[in-house]
Structure formats: structure tokens, C-alpha cells
Amino acid sequence: MNDEIRCAIKHYMNIGEQIKKTRTAKNLSQKEVALALEMDQAQFSRIENGKTDPSFSTIEKIAHALGVGLVELVNADDIFKEVNSYDKSIFEKLALVDQLEEKEKSAFFSILDALVSKKRLKDTLSHALNMI
Amino acid sequence: MNDEIRCAIKHYMNIGEQIKKTRTAKNLSQKEVALALEMDQAQFSRIENGKTDPSFSTIEKIAHALGVGLVELVNADDIFKEVNSYDKSIFEKLALVDQLEEKEKSAFFSILDALVSKKRLKDTLSHALNMI
DNA sequence: ACGTTATTTGATTTATTTATCAAATAATCT
DNA sequence: AGATTATTTGATAAATAAATCAAATAACGT
Image (cartoon, rainbow over all chains, first blue to last red; front, side):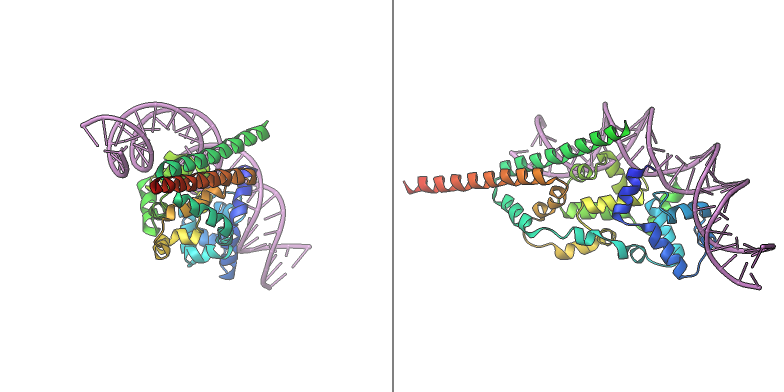
């Protein structure tokens, strides 16, 4: 896993930290939990320390082995609950799209798609530049 | 991914189904969401259909692109309680607009303003014509 | 300080996700 | 039905998680 991805993960949430917090709160060792998981303890350590980006099912299994639900494991740091609260003024404006006719609506969204893909291209390019 | 793992996933939850439910409830296409995600649309399809076991960060990114928190994605059924009369699809495009940079956002809304005022002009004109 | 247990890290191999492109199928609209 | 759009599936290459074993640190109790 490269730094960019690790950064992206961190930007979202530190699931490893949540896992460790939950595990230690229950006085469990990595070995015990990993055993219950049928997962290698070394791999479990890497997950706790964010050295790897585990699969979703692995997170589910860990939650299960820790005796908590996925939501409990995760919810504390779900920062996007706030980030996604929509800007009201933007919402008002976007509601205007409703008044457009079909043809113009689709044109409008074509532009949105184009802008988003343009951004994607730009991100990809700048990423490629950083590789040099 | 072998059958055993796929079974294990199913035993826990069908996250792909939740994603699809959320996406369709918001009237978004795979293409749109995948674009916002900077993920291949084909891969997105495989995730929705449980053909692959996505990474945790991928699920986080999908939740973000869909404009919901992880918890809401996991409990995707809750979405329907907030569906109201107007066309939600427009509202939900906000998740995509949110990805744009400021400059592009304002350009985007300039175009919207232009389209809306054009329509108003047209309506006014046709109304005036009917007066004749 | 010593011994024991717990955790981290390294190195290597294997399994699987992801990216990409193409093509087939399904769904939708006129 | 025909056309257009959306989704699924296939094949292949590249990136990366997971399994395994070993060895180095760290943490902890006595």
C-alpha cells in the first residue's frame, strides 16, 4: 500500500484504531482475537496499525470476533455524517434544475459528468506526475 | 474469491445489495457513482453483485460518493423513511457536485442560472404569444 | 534485571481485489 | 421494433491483502 492510499484511508477513518480500542477495552490479546478469527496474528497487528487496507468482510469478521456489531466498531469516527450535511444554498440552486425541460436537464447533467471526469483525469495526471 | 469466502460474506451481510439499494433509491447510475469514486464502473458492478469482496476503504469511498455515512450504507433500508415527494435524484447529484473544485462549482452554477433564466424568458414569451 | 508474553516488523508466497478494455446482455425510451 | 443507455461478464495485467514463519522489540509481571 502506498502513501497516497494510506492517507486516503486516514482521511476517512482509522478503523484499526477503533479495533484496537475495542479489543483492549475487552482485555483481549491480538492472539486470542486472531485465533477466533482464524486469521494470522501478524496480519491482525498490521490491520490495527493501518499498515494494510483490509477487506470489508475481514472487518465484519473482526467485529464479530470482538463481540460487537459493525456499527459499534465503526460509528464513533464516521466523520462523513457531518461532512455530508448539504450546503443549503447549493441545494436551493440545484432545485432549480427541476424547472428545466428534459433536454436541458440531461445537457446539464452531461456537463456535470464531464466536469467530474475532467477532475478525475486531472487527479490521475497529477498522480502520474508525482510518480516521476 | 472462493465459494467459502463468498458464503461467509453472505452470512454477515450483503453490502453490495445495500449499495445498490442506496444508489437506486437516489436515482444514480453506476457510471456516475463510479466516476465520482474514481473507480472502474465494471468493478463497481461486481461489488454490487457480490462478485468480489471490496476493501474497507472502497466501501468508505462508495458511501461518500453516495452521500451517506458508512452506518447509513450498512442500514440502507433507512433511506426510504426520508424519501419525500419531489424528485430526489436532483438532490442526490449533490454528492457529485461536492467533488468539484470551487472554480468549477461556480461555473457549473452559472450554466444552471443561464438555463433557468432562458427557460423563464421562453415561458414569458410563449405566454405573451398566447395573449395575441 | 530477568523471564515471559505481547506486539511489531521483515521476507516470501499465495490469493484476490482493482484497472482496463471489450463485448454481450439487459433495461429503457420513442 | 429499433435505438440508446445501463449493466453484466470476460480476459488479462498490475497492485495489494492475506498466510506463513522467523526474528526483533516492546510491555509486563515477578
